[in-house]
Image 1 (cartoon, rainbow, N blue to C red):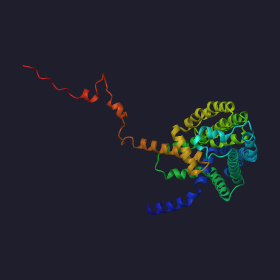
Image 2: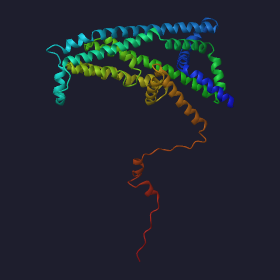
Image 3: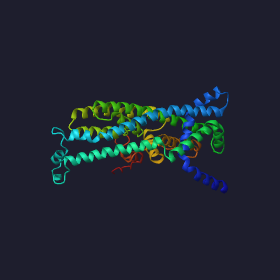
Image 4: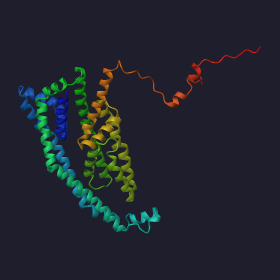
Length: 376
């Protein structure tokens, strides 16, 4: 046993740097199993050829939309960053436009001596917008062009996915053989793994596309430049439940109010608050929560924790980990239900202090009353 523990620990240490691409490959392989089985029947049982065909189709389906979306984002980012200074000067520099310096002094009189001038505000905001655009362009360019680390992880994912598809049955059989679980529990683990992955990807992509499209249209009609770019940013940030799209449209509404455009700002606020953000609140519990059989809070924790721990792909890995965590405790509770003590109704301190029946507290009601002595 000691030898098994030591060797297993060394193997986990070796495989830990490759955990992210291996998990992505396993998730995609599980989702592509129906298509792989169709190719197996088409190629008369040649599983290696069916695995290659599945990878090719998956690459075409994923690479096309992602490349188009990133290309549009890069193009719009370049446009926004190049037009930032003329756009700001056109609004801040004219005599009839919003005077940011005067607005600061009127609302914060104590800042009159050290408030920045109009030109300093324009240059500062312009440099900030240009810096954000440059950062987004460089980040997207490095992602699409591929760094050495990205290419290595991509190769590992494809290589692992090929064998997960081709030899998935043997791999799962070997893993389940060494797990001290009943066959039904092993089937539940596999089913939960696939259902959570499918629900998370399907729900997140659909919600992101809807929020990005409707949010971009709102930006376009509100007169905000680069509406397609901001729509793509909404699609990316929509992986964060509840607040993702708001990270884009809330600053835009505030900015329109500062520019002295209350009507477009109010209309954009109403549109985004009642339509764009409502999409997340209405569809995510139905598309992700019900199919994944998890509470909204667990989805929120899994998504944010996965993003922090695993990066962009963590929006899938995180909920999967949370789902398997909950399922593990369900299996534990079922296995030891005869040993674990029963749990009754949980009462708060306020509820326990309230009278039970007719204004008589339970303790006073159940306790015997002292007998009165008869007067002689």
